[in-house]
Amino acid sequence: MLRAFAIGAAICAISISAFAQNNLVGKWGGSFEFTGGSRDKRPIGVDVEITSVEGDVVKGVARNYAMTCGGEYQIAGKLEGNDLRMASPQTGGGTNDCRFGFRVVVDGTKMTGKIGNYNLTLNKK
Image 1 (cartoon, rainbow, N blue to C red):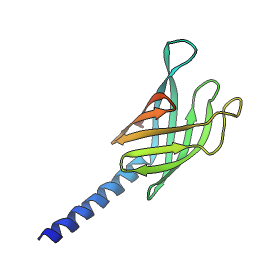
Image 2 (tube, one colour; image 1 turned 135 degrees about the vertical axis):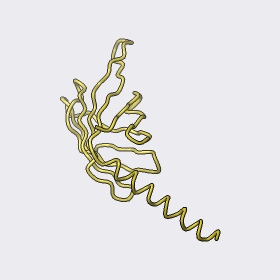
Image 3 (tube, helix red, strand yellow; image 1 turned 30 degrees about the vertical axis):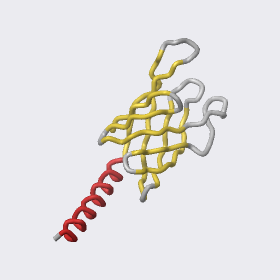
């Protein structure tokens, strides 16, 4: 009986993990709070489209709407439980020296975390 319960629990955990991975695929949008030279915080838009999740490898494309570092970035990362880390291997932006990456916790249709030192929130579209 205990063995059957353990097997059932393992199957359930795998199913939940597969559902969470498939739920990541799609379009996400939100912003991060940027503090520039002044102390005023202003939201900077970010769109992320996750195109694939294979095992713990996540791939997609992001659009950063910041003035200097704005642009489109190919991103890839790793999903460990609900923790997702993604980054772009290339630099971009107006001066082509900006990096893009973030770390978030996935909670259903919402992701919260950091992009650099700034708070980031993304919601599934």
